[in-house]
Amino acid sequence: MGQETMGKKDREQKKKKNQKEKAERKKEREANNSKGKGLDSMMAYIDENGNITDTPPDPSRKKEIELDQIQLGAAARLPEDPADLIRTGTVSFFNDAKGYGFITDSVTRQNIFVHANGLTEPIKDRDRVTFEIGSGPKGPVAQKVKKVK
Image (cartoon, rainbow, N blue to C red; front, side):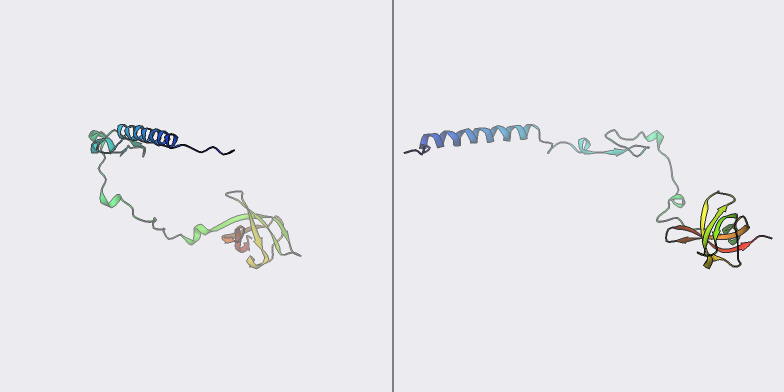
């Protein structure tokens, strides 16, 4: 008694309405379809700045590149001169009890950590030293530290 049921006519009307909407969507898709268009409309080009564009490049701006100039993979590392690795600096702080301190590089003015294990002889504050830079867990570390006399 309290329930309303859909009649057969209502269901048929709803079905026709859905079919009509489906047909309209199909016509819209066909009108906006990109299939069947020419290859030229689908082409993309890269300009001299590396940007993607739809206009083909100008042949007069073409640059010839020799095969020897093309680098594949990572650049080869040049062998480092051992004399370039040795740096000079001043001990800005060193704590003998704890066994660590800092050296200020004379060229880069960077503070570099030094540990007692990296010393070849004892140092103290304001000593002029030579050292090599190695890598530690938290950044650059001075190694093979020697006093300059």
